[in-house]
Length: 444
Image (cartoon, rainbow, N blue to C red; front, side, top):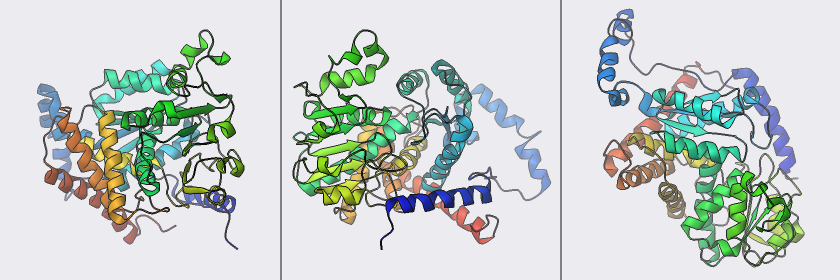
């Protein structure tokens, strides 16, 4: 008998506990310079290190030539919206941030550091991140609750001259767009024509909707649903100052649902071509009978963590043509882990100042094209984490686009970007293999 999704989830949780106890963490700091004798420390540290220090003092930009700042990212969280677990605090969020740093390094060759802040106040988080700027080449915001995550991201993007990215927003948006591009090709439907039920209006789906609209989805063909039902601007919970408190959601209500349709998930799915759900962990959040009311060749993205809103096999039996989740143990993992390592590899290699919507769309197109080269089908619409070349091609595409927009400090051609990305990612992966071979990383 085939193992159920719940059984697999239980086994994964048990194995996660065992390995976290074994390793007591997932990341460590290792030298990247040769050390042949103790006298080398006179070059790397005092007195020799004074020379690069004084050079940077004269020309601050040389910090990217003389230190590893250019290849470092801070993974910053306050622990208020961790996976599907909610507000569990900065210490409890640390295993996730370590995991993020591991993916950055292994998949993108990026040195990332987990930083969990002991504050929930938006302005304090903004100040803390600004103070980190001298040490990092980029910032990855992670698992910060809605609505403050929007304010924090916007403020930091405006005030900092290194890329600031909120992966729950932008990363999820990019991978969803890439997956949707190929899903629509398979069912022979056009972006401008399809209708979408957006289930959940947290940071992820707000950002997804924004990027989809920029990419060609018509917002008038969309219905957005939160815990109270379908959004429309005259809904009573938007009265008075509440519409300012939930400004992102209110703005979404103004450009979607022109007929002011009411109801909940069932009504939103009725007659929809696409379901994009990032709401609460399932199963049972979305019923099979509701999927049956969708249009022919329906596309269902059920991406809640840790359990999708509806099990993929249930959605398929109910008539969905293509089903995606956020999990690696199902086909079509629509997870931002295939986005941020390659995207950041690209922006760091050209020392980009920011990450734009256009760069996000280019990243999505790169991932979609890579999958198409391999032959997309109902169970393969997006590259997997095992396809290293996808990250390299994404890095090249993003690096080229950043230069096209005039937002970089360095100029590299396509060949140089490809070589750089390939080398950085290869070195990271081979280093892990070597440490395992030498038993310096114990076998689990």
